[in-house]
Every structure is written in C-alpha cells, then in structure tokens.
Figure (cartoon, one colour):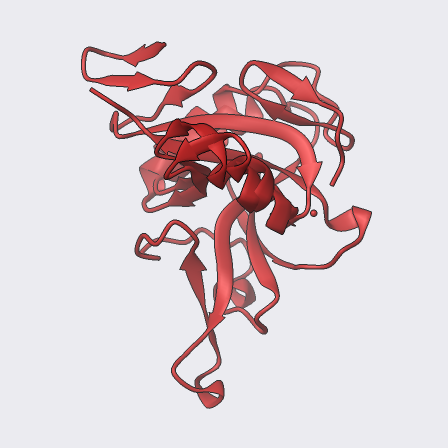
Length: 210
C-alpha cells in the first residue's frame, strides 16, 4: 500500500493526491470514453473512479506518475504497468470500472492546484509530445433544449472549475461531448465517436483511506 504522509493510504499502484483524500492511477491504454468510464467504475478497490482534477497541483501530480519513454500515440499507462490495448472516452469509463473498486471513476478536477498536480503527473513521461487524456467530464442538457448544454462530472461532484484552452470549449455544443486534459494541463472539448482517432489514455481515481 502507498501512504500519503501519515494520513492517507492508497491501493497498490495508486498515488495519493495533494489533499490526501483521493488516489490516482494513470492508464496509458487508449480507450473510448465509455470504456474508460466503465473500467474505472469496476476497479477492484474501494472508492475508485476515473480521476478528476480540481487544481493545478493535482494536475502536476498526475503528470509526474507517468513513465518515461512513453509512446504517446499507441499506449495507455496505469501506475504499475503498460497496456497496449487501443480503444475511445466512453470505453475508457468502462475500463476503469472493470477494476472493481467501489466508488472508482474517471477523475474530476476542482481547482488550479489539482489541475497542476495532474499536469505534472502526466507531463513527466511525455516530455516531447502533447498527449490528451480523458477526464470524467461529459456534456448534459440544461433544463430545456433552449438552454443549451452544460458540463457534468461523472463522479457526481460539482463542476466548479475549468481550464479550457479555447474559450469556446467552456460550453458544450451537444450531448455527445467529453473533456480531455493535455500533458500541459490545458483542457479541450472532444466529440465522442466510435473510431480509433477518438481513443485516448485516461486516469482513474479512488478515495484514499486513513
């Protein structure tokens, strides 16, 4: 078990976040969003989900967990190993769930410190290339179709922070959209589709124990 100071304990292969409340694991296998979502939800540990990032510090931390010499185009990494399976963001969700951890999900990010933490975690092993990873954010309809769409974290937490590079991405344009984070910590909007170009690596999160 990995310990975060004297407060938090994480499952094997997971790294504790800055606040000691969540543990993260990077998966470099490329999956559709739906499969990544399911994978994180089914992790075999208590409280795991695809990682959500709530601050820049968390983003930097996640970035630092990735291994060196990583092929940014053909692999997903989880802390502890590499998978060559290439899949899309919906499938990434399913992939994380398959680890059978209670409460596991794709990550959500709630402040600049968490975002930086995740950025560092991802960029440490992606020095020469920008690689996009699935976050646990998807588009939902507002109260009526006339009100447009809004972003929503799959883990049910408040969507109270964003770090989109393009201002136009702050508001989803349809229901079939999800959020990705690059190794530089910048977010982007991605249209969900079942083709290889829309497969991406992802990060699962799980609650830490004391």
